[in-house]
Amino acid sequence: MFSRLPFIASIALLGALLGGCWHGSLYAERPKDKAVDAAIDRLWAEEIRRVARDGDWILSRSLTPEGDMVTSIQWGEEFSHASMVDVTHGTIVEAITPVVREIPIEELMSRNWYVVVLRPRGQTAEQAKASLERARGELGSEFDFWGFIGYEEADKWFCSELVYWASGFGKQVILQPNELFDYGEVVYYSGRRNDKQVQMIAADRVNVGHDTAVAGASSSDGDEALEIIP
Image 1 (tube, rainbow, N blue to C red):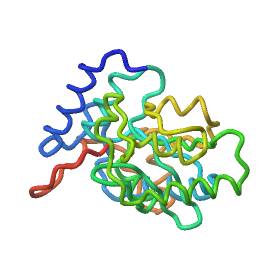
Image 2: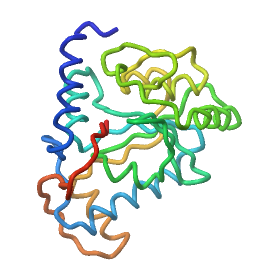
Image 3: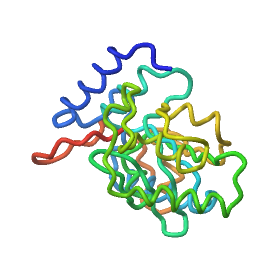
Image 4: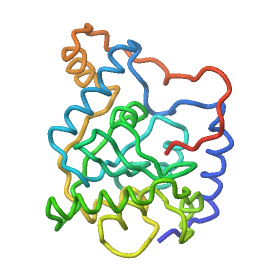
């Protein structure tokens, strides 16, 4: 499945090294108005709560250098991460450095350029909820860093590996996030964060005006621990 392992390994390692000083995507920009930017997070989260169900997958394209690197060596749809949504509690379960964790939907939205909700094929709503609990049972398990190059570690999880396994499609197997399209149906697409129409809709929702100009991706203040955010 992965025919360019040395190249992919170099990409992943370079992302880890640069993650502490290069904070934005080279391809995507955030709205200049921070209120509009935050409104987009809330807009997407609200829409996902409306159309998704527990156990659906969220495929996302991040606004990070790691996201740029992961998608640069993929084919087809460009997604850098996969997670599973809990609509009931407004959270997602994701495998990310350093461990599998559960965070609010809005927090996932805030770091992404665009997202898609994918519904696993052939699942009833009850089966989907069981999948979510299976994924949640892995909270605290270590992230499988070597999953970036297609090497599987049985006691660790890569992002798309976790949601694929938890949904009952088979044993642990390393997949790229965009390969999950073979196992699900799209039920929601957010549009891109730097699309003017997306920004205007979000601004209308919170009545913050229509400044749809974009600027460079946001930066972080102070020193941060090394973390890979796909």
